[in-house]
Each structure stands twice: as C-alpha cells, then as structure tokens.
Image (cartoon, rainbow, N blue to C red):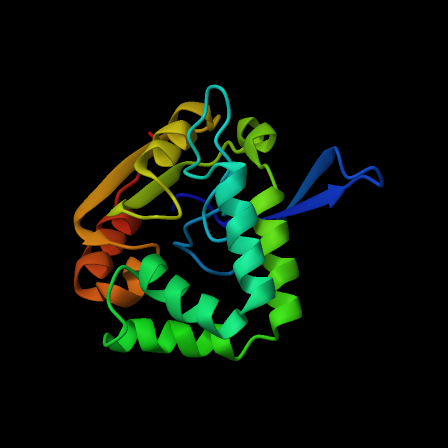
Length: 196
C-alpha cells in the first residue's frame, strides 16, 4: 500500500494573525490500501486566491472586496449570481439549483465571515511541508481556481505530484456538475502510485 496511516495536520494562527504553525501526527489505520491525502484547504483546494507579484490566484483585491460587498448588501441576489459562476452552468441546471439552495440555507453573516476567511488566507508557506505524493486534479475552466494554481502547487509541494487538467469539465465543483467525467479520473489516480 501507498501508506497505512492517516496524517493529521493542525494549523494554528498566531495571536497577531500573521504567522502560521504546522504540526502533524501519524495515526495507524486499519485500512490496508488507504491512500493518504492531505488537502490544504483555504476553501476547497486553493492555497491563495489573491494575485501576487509572482503568483496568479485569479482575483485582485477589488474583486474580493466586491464579492464581500455583494454578500453583505444583498445576500439572496449574490447567491443567485455566484452559484452559476462557481458551478459552471445556468440557473436551470439541477446542480446550480442545489448549490444555490446550499448557499441560501447558510446565514448571511456566517457566509460573509467564511468568505472573508477563505479569501484572505494564504497557504503557500506551508506547501514545502507536504511530502506525501499528491494527485492534483483540475477543471479547465474554474473561475475560483485557475489552472496556474495547480501548476504552482505542483512546483512547490515537497513530495512528488502529478497534475491532470480535465478538459471536458468546467466550474469549481466538477464532482457535482460532471461526475461521469470526474469519477473515472479519480479512480485512475487512486490506482496509480506516484511514490516510486
């Protein structure tokens, strides 16, 4: 097996909120062929949304400020507009409607705080601590996570990694919008061992 343990990562923000500390522990697992996956989550799978001098995360500060303002000023309208952009479909799509329903069920104040946290966090300094093999699977048109982010992860993770861009999917949630495409890709990656 690739590994027989689950790695637990704990991130702690310092009191000044400017530095992060990382600790991890290995836990024995009875699952024989368990594939260890570390997901560094700021949201779903991104290490930073804001563009930087040498990094393209997909958003300028103005974009994030507008997004937060939309949540604060008219949450229902924001949900209706945001869902099709993120999922990659139109409002008539069952997947978009389901994602919209999920957003509508969240309290606006919690959604605003969550969005603020998601869009202000930067995981890039922690990537060098990830030493397990990583399979990076990316949708070709993802308004939240451009393909360049996957390439950045691939270059900056300490362990071996492979990237697969799924050219027949779009949106940030291809597992919902295109499960017929995503499931075979996931199964192929689960079966392949890049550790050698």
